[in-house]
Image 1: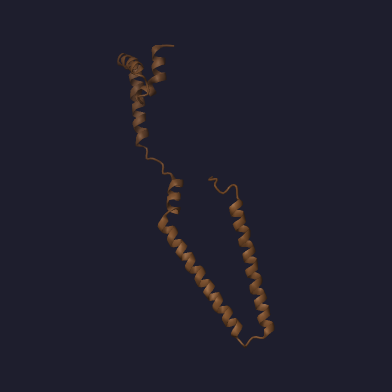
Image 2 (image 1 turned 120 degrees about the vertical axis):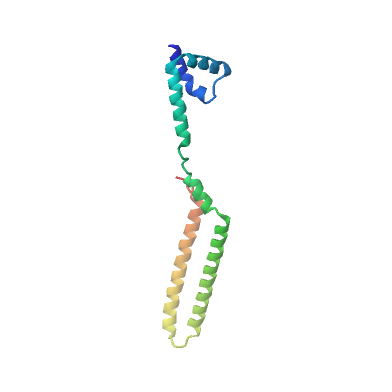
Length: 145
């Protein structure tokens, strides 16, 4: 193995400052006397400079987590959902009250609509319960792809 081969192996480490003082000195002395190794050093320095000028790629996952984890947005979203749910419950309560005191409907019609409403509510509750159980027991929920 020639001296140039040894320098080529360690030149990248030399340029990055990763070699010992003795190794750096040996490479520096050789480069000063060898035109081929000087040219290689110039090319590597140019390549290193070009690489440093490349814009850094944004970490989109980190940005997404930052946006999703924004405290103010989460609080606004919680208040919005609370108001939507509260308004829906109040509308349903008022509708049920009006439905009960409305004398224009027969008892049979009230029974049919009540059965339909209660059945839909029970189906919604059962699906919601299953989703909550699945959410708690999902062993893959913390895995990011």
